[in-house]
Image (cartoon, rainbow, N blue to C red):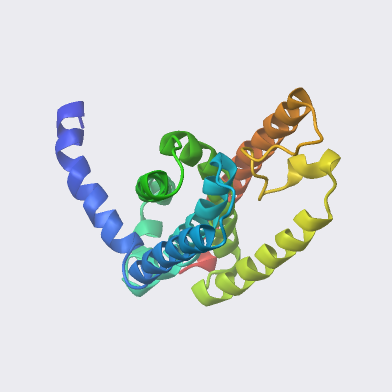
Length: 237
């Protein structure tokens, strides 16, 4: 297939995968993410919250996690429900291409939605660069998404994976609250735009850099584990 043929097929391929990925309950998660954003913005106005880039990052963090939750947790189950799981596993190595493409589509779609949320926050609350905020926000979103995808290849049940992901999210919250500043580089919820007042900018920059490496390398490792788990065809079909 040459480039021209690929470009002609790509829109249909993306549309089909979007229909599979975001079918069913995703619109409810999108609505919930928007409602959460509106609640955070209204609370900020009513409580005279000090607005900053860090605050905008903070109010976009939860909507980002809500948006990645459904497609990454229920993706494999959606394939099974749509009777295409056997087809995917019936073509050698095709499953890798399918899921790599789907994850790329998922992250691009979520990034676009978060940019729109960012513009809403920009015009209603505080002037920020939505692309800069979202570029950094996508690191923990992709980390959590790849983790959920990896777990879904182990649990092989959307509802079961959802329970495990929620329990891990609660564990992350407790773990983050117990971390000192020296170990905050391991914090998935670290806000890079909210520098503590009692720390030197160079030290903070080093922490943010190490946190970026942790999220990027960790997310890539989780993705690779998930893809390797797809080799175990007999456990899925």
